[in-house]
Length: 287
Image 1 (cartoon, rainbow, N blue to C red):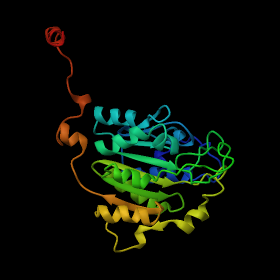
Image 2 (tube, one colour):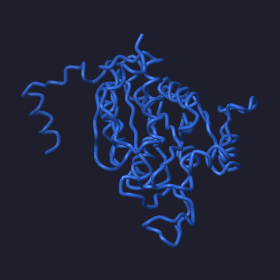
Image 3 (cartoon, one colour):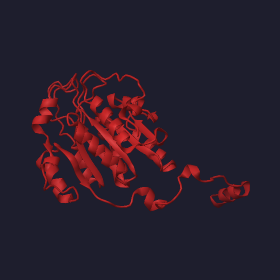
Image 4 (spheres, helix red, strand yellow):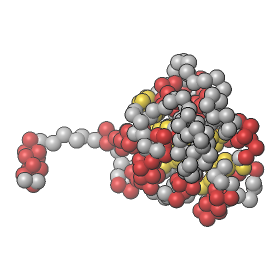
């Protein structure tokens, strides 16, 4: 049985001491060990920003893509080899600025993979700029008089886009974070997990204590039913998006189940070569 340490490649993260991303990295490693995922069957893809470094710290296949493009690459990897456990990760900008369109269409496509949003409500790598998830009035170097924009709410946005697995975590709730990642990977469909991850250097508003004071932990409500879509949306609205746990889950065929069938071989195992005659026939059909 693998341990969490087995999923570390021993490279020391360069995040600021106290950054919430350490907790997310550890939760992913622990979740992978609980599921005993073989290293050669584990692929992580990231974009740009502080979150983009995560794929470089995991023991498995890693791909550091460009800004906002982790999801197209991760989906391509899963399409080519559906036997891989594919995990994509990105920050505020990757998921809900330059990469917004990819996020929405990946959600509705429902490919069997997991997407983790490392949400610190600020652009940390560029030294503290307002993000699409920053609160109205948020003061940063790019909005010295306070942000004039209304923030996107990742949970509400994902649910409206048709998410079949939506969960939210907090870097300060390690046990819950591990649990929702495990269940997200096990889910047969697209799993989006929004994680509130404090930036201790540039975001002095959304601190660990601030989240502890404001987050509603759904695991503490024994009556909450994550299979109830309307209740999930109501809970997100009631809490202004600040709730943690599995918010919504439903079972339906994943994208690959619909187009290939659940028992189909991975594309990499198929013989895709064609004869010269077949190739020329194809060309002639499109003249």
